[in-house]
Image (cartoon, rainbow, N blue to C red):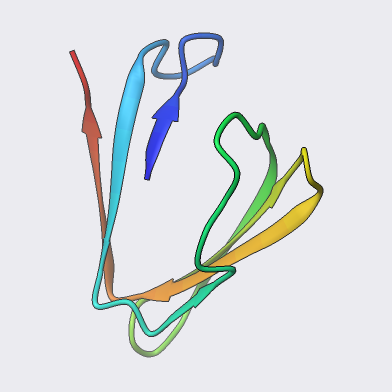
Length: 74
């Protein structure tokens, strides 16, 4: 997942988020240009569960995975 965070508070650049050992991914596709509105992260026995609310269209994205890698793009 590639995120444009140039208007964000933390990275202020593009970042790449790679999930490994994915057990669940719903929905399997997201609309480009959506805004990340809200998130919740839970620890699971196998790793973690990430729930993100996106706008345009309003949709909840869920991924359950073993690990996540966050890379700052130049």
